Figure 1 (cartoon, rainbow over the protein chains, first blue to last red):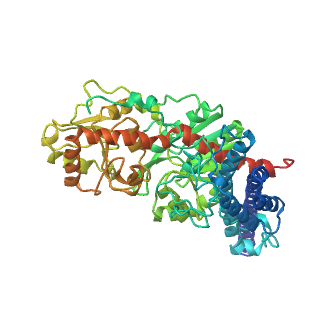
Figure 2: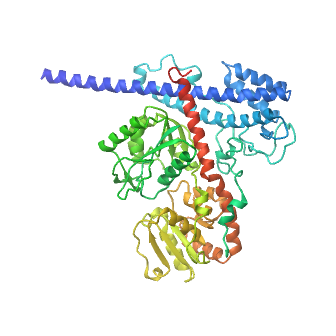
Length: 236
Length: 367
């Protein structure tokens, strides 16, 4: 009888231990995913600020230059610094500059192209990172995870907290404006459907593709009536 | 890069997910990447070089329709071997919320995983039951893609957390260049594509509408499944059964109107885009997904879902108005460009690159 009890207890302990080990493994994997997500997001944010600084220098825009500098060096107030940079870029009208304009200097057009590409990737990596943080936090909330003190003392810091910025700058503009826009209006009135600060795409009539980087993803860019001629049919 | 794609459904059966995986694989190969596809295979297995057989699937009723799924020791072994031998930089699984080889691949994957969600599934008992099994596996997914707003909503509801919206792709040129059947379009031919015996595809609605249309209007039905026609329609409705990809493109090119009478369960409506790429004017039920693809009704005609008389009226009006059909064709061709695989493939590669960059930066010795 007592052997049976000991046996059962041993089995129970083994099962619980296996479960906890499995949970700890999951936790480790999720933490690694959050770290990787942050590394990608950090890289994309730098890739956005660097061409912004270049462009600001060329166009002698002190405000954008200061914001870009701050974003590149910020550690504590990263969200605020990135938001300020986005706001400055918008106010300077840099998001309405045509990318790769042949008449201007090559670097200027290239910087605009880089900004569009980086903006799309900032959005992607920010979403992937926030998803990773969400999954990590969900696991840590479980009673067994608390019992194991998983992630104890590891709840703060940039790689463990959601990163919320307005990442819509450049993405709410077509990547290749048809004609040059007038310079620097502070705000554009004709944007009633601009996504909110959380940056959720309003996909109803503007799938994300329309807002991804210059040229390569502009949905209408490839529209060539001659190529489509083969599809036209007589008699209908 | 080396990419491992996982398709959960039988490769040689027609289906939106299979077509997506095939076109994605070919797009990636065209871009110079190395691709291997792990997929269950049915009977007549003429597999392309890049496919690896994961085993024979079993039909399982799941989430309101019959899915042919695959789980078991044999496919688990094959999945592990495929992952081990593939040496992939990245695994891209499709529809991992169904119990399938895609979920197995998530379980066994070591490296970065990207997942695409295709279906709009309202939160159901079946899915809630499986949740404890798929949540740990899905935690490995570093980048989620949804092909439609409805599919995105599903991931938010089931998994918490968002997904990037990248629409389904269409190989526009393949459809635009297909040769129509001789003598078509003839001004009186409707076309339906889809499983005839799947109620949500809505063939019953279309057959009812056919009985209200003039007797010279014909209907071509392509897709697997048995259906019994009322005697009054047997002369006007032709059941073609399952058709090949080439025949499907030819069929759409031959249509005067493509009809999508689905009553639900569609999250995207890829076949509408294929019809538009082939230059067929579209009449579709007023589902969210279809309304979106048809630009709110500007690129096609919408009718109230399940309303056969309304469908008949819309079809009759469109058949007697060639200039309206021409306008819809032109608008359709314009709309479909943004779904061309070159566009969609580039967006997916961008997701891969974002995920891989993070993995590379945090890899031991990576920085």
